[in-house]
Length: 365
Image 1 (tube, rainbow, N blue to C red):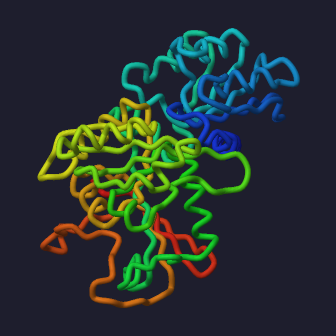
Image 2: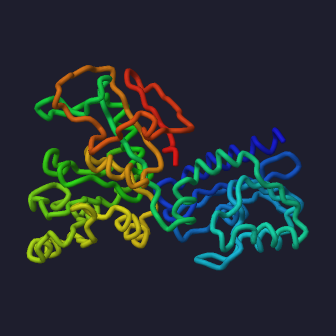
Image 3: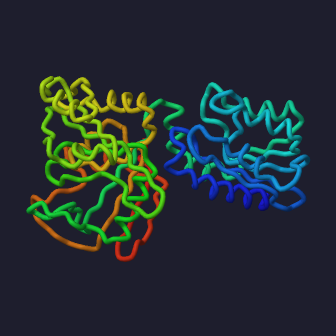
């Protein structure tokens, strides 16, 4: 069992090489072992490319007949952009497949395993399943619901402020913590803010990191069409796509101005005078945006949490105190009345990043 876990851990490492390249497909790695030797490794490189199992088979240094294949996700059983991996493994006469988790698609879950077993391949499943589910949490949510996985990112001082009383926010955390945020941006297909953030900060909402990277789709929630025409997210369409989310409160003339500039606009129903966020998530899902990094202001953050649409929180905390009765906090809105109704996080992890700290946790549903 320890040997199985060792090789499954290696599939996780390989799978992570596909971060930011395979959406909305899952992150998958594969290792082929024969006579206690690794004879091949592979992973899913990009959307539409060979799946991890096929990539590994193509990299094999010798015949894979009689070998054990380790993979973090059940081999597929359907014809899509590539043929079924389960059938290919049977054809190559591997003896054993060890996997972490089943396909989360309820329509196909278990079918790959059945193909393997009917082909005489021994199957062991559930090895490091929890870790595998965490690795592909975005894919699981999107595949099972059609809605994007939402991670809320905040950065605040020790006394819970995201800016000083005059609105200065550069910078709350140190350089290394900010670099980690750009790693997060590379992982998510979309990044979302409210119009107040665009007006106050004029952010670029792009990924600034070394090496290969991608810029997420920039989503601005703007019920009344207040986005200025001279801000960065409007005038940098060559860097990243921007989607402005309006309600019918925004005039057709204002929408046309942005459309002529090559900016996508979407008009969605209102809910209590704001954009109906549930409908917004459904629309983003239809756009193949499987994951969203929420970097909103305090009002949008609370609205998303209140609607039950936030799955995970990344809270960066700097050992600074700025005070100020009116200094902004990461989450505002109406808030809850009783402490027992507070939104709780589970599976909490903490990380020290030089002088800063990051707290990561799943939102308790």
